[in-house]
Image (cartoon, helix red, strand yellow):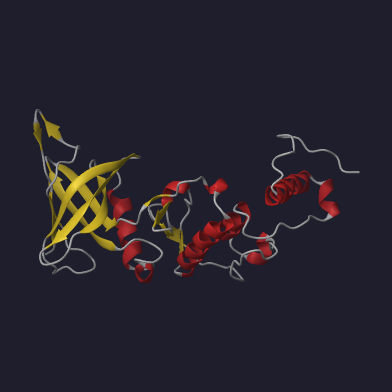
Amino acid sequence: MSSLVVKCDLDFLQVGDKLFRMDIGMPTTSNPDQPPLSFTEGKKIYGGDRIQVYLGKLLQEGKESVDVVMKVDFCNARHGDLVQEAKYYETQAKALQGKTVPLFYGIYSATIEHQLITGLVLEYCGEPMETSLEEASEIFSFEVAKLLMALHSASLQHNDITEGNIVVKDGVPRLIDLGTATLHDCKRTKPIKLDEERPSMLEFGCRELHNFASQQGIWEPTMTPHDLIETEDGRKRIESEAREILKYLGIGETLSQGKSEKVL
């Protein structure tokens, strides 16, 4: 049985001045017979939504240490979510590990003071992107779109494409956090290509990919048929596309918020 020994203080469970340390034992789905691993030098880098994330070193006898993150559920509130995420890494996303998503080093659990604790250990892939998605370049956005297409080709939809879930190391982006991912039968009819004319959603076939490529300006914006002006949805679409054209031309926002002017 593989085990993970946590050799650092994690600020999660205290009784007076005593801080418990974890010795988590559970077979990994990858290699249940591998030697014990150690997680050291843990430093919390995120806390929220009943999950704590620690950056540290993963040590295995006879091997060099690697930088990893450990997502920890200390109160048995997200145990099932972490188990499901681990399954995605080991099944649909297995071939994407180390390229599109982080390498997966195992999921471990232990009961401490009658409390189930679960830890998911993943490769450290860098820091969250420095700019907002709105400010990201077309080239960078296109690289992220390729990662998303790879994920969709592996039958997974991410469902939470935000700046915090796109990390960068040595200029290379990677997708993280499959905690909200779902199985997905992608119906896209063509790959996303930089500066091609934007297809309609119905023509393209996949909403998550279409939304991302549209919002990031990867595609050339298209003009809207005049007859759409006659409907409220049509006017909203015209306004949205007008903003995209202005953004593409570098002119900026000129349309008043929440108002549509009648086109003669």
